[in-house]
Amino acid sequence: MADDRARLNLKSLARHLDLSVTTVSRALRNGPEVRRETIERVKKAAEELGYVRDLGGLTLRTGLSYSICVLITAPPIGETADTGTIALLQGVHEVAADAGYSVTAVPIDSRQDPIETLRGIIDGRRSDGLIFDYTEPMDARVRFLLERDFPFVTFGRTELFTPHCWFDVDDQDATYRSARYLIERGYKRICLLNPPPGLMFSQYRLRGYRRALAEAGLTIDPELIVEQELNARLMRATTARIMSIDNPPDSFIYANDVTVLGAMAGLRDIGRNPADFGMVGCNATLLTEYIEPRPASFYFPLLEAGRRLAHLLLKRLAGGEVSQLQELAQTELRAP
Image 1 (cartoon, rainbow, N blue to C red):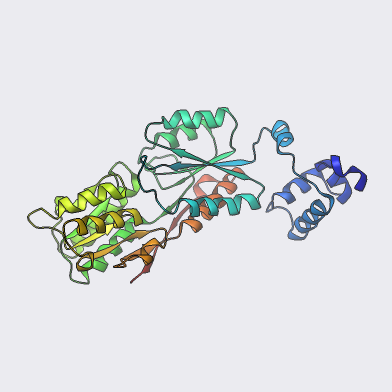
Image 2 (spheres, one colour; image 1 turned 90 degrees about the vertical axis):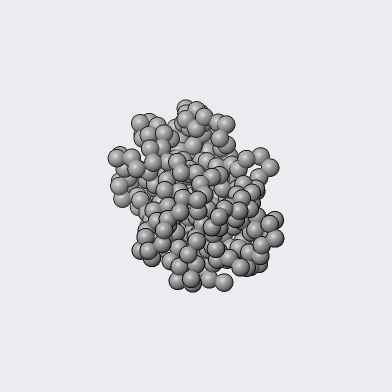
């Protein structure tokens, strides 16, 4: 076997171990159908003998790329991006690499046709499965992928009748609890800083906000509901503007760390101290723990979100039932 080091392939590795090629292939990808001791034995032999997986050959033989593609929503040029993107990709990579898959990240901006992007990935056989975010109620990307029967998982839900694989953080519950947190501390003019209304998680956030205010007997003032792109520059200008209305807010529910940074900057621009206002919202990073005044947050880490998205996609690639591959995660309060 030592003499064959330079041309060691899957078949010769299987012959050396007296196992089937299928078993060795599945063991190298940590297949759940293979016993742990067999996986360890195969990987140990592969390392000792210098086996390197020939992805080019595998692609030709199987038609698979052994790659997962993550479509990342890119911010406008020059704007501050969501700081958790790297953590999300890290979580996907940890799980995918353990199963023998590589991960490709593709930034997407509003000028691109999302369907053409998907068609290029599928027709070019660049990926075996997709992960993407910022879902809409009747998301055209989801409909397209369902029609093509291509494996995917969304970071977010839709309102489509046909089930699909998704992972989501319960934004409705987090926003409801955020509003309750402020109400219990005496705040009554609560401003909701929300993403555009066409996004599914924006609608969930609005439902949670309305429920909390209705339960507390507070009037829902449309002037205190802001729905726009989540970037610091816009939120800075909007916060300064909204403080000029006749009955301005005394508190804010933000959507992510970028929006709270913009809101605080907007208050300072007009000579107001952010410490005089209630601040609470949804976070997927710990950035807000390093700013003053530190706001409260309902937190779920993007690293873990990436891991769960990857686990769901791998199960889908293995033939898992779509209706069983849907997961809603709860947030944890991190108070200052």
